[in-house]
Image (tube, rainbow, N blue to C red; front, side, top):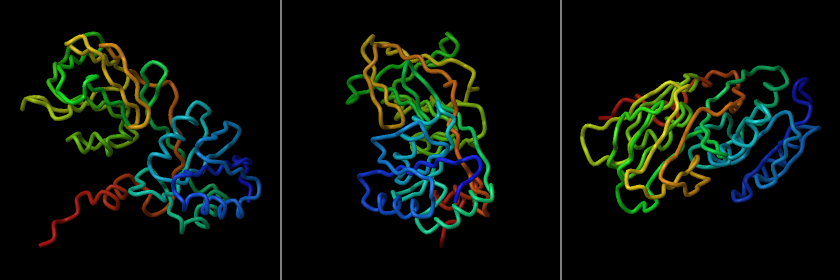
Length: 265
């Protein structure tokens, strides 16, 4: 099968998940003009990325391919697979929908700080993460709040169902242009998450003038000085969304996170 827009398809698998390479080879037999390679050897020379693994695999591939505007679709062979559009049994369905252009593309907002980017979130903690820190939050160079907390999560709408949700942040529909800022285990009762527009610039400072640990999508971490600047990334992640009965964000919330499911008596 060759889609008019996607003549060269890359099939990317996570080598740490044994089922991933097997599934990648199966998909390759059904796609004549496709390349197969592990997550560690990503190449820009493809028109569509089919990613096989869990959410971590998807996030890593999305960060890489966003600057090439390469659409990405995931097959979940991990645990939750919230970002994946398909399961291993959906191969023929996915190929048929690609063939018939029965899909849509969504641009997902991303964050950046210096040379690193994130699709889900940027987490900031004190360099000594075993104790709380006093973190000053500045929005457009104005002090908004001071948090005595274990850290701060700055999340995109895509990441609002990940770490941010676990820390008490709101669920944000993924097409909204905004960020959430969520304190991690705040030491006071009057600090709550806040949602801000994506065009605003964020600065987090450690009041103790000590270093900060900055983690991108839970995968890339670095030690910064006492100040971290965060803003909207110029590139978006481009997600390929299949047109099917359960392709809507709210359906996925119900299916994978049991959102709004009635309590059984």
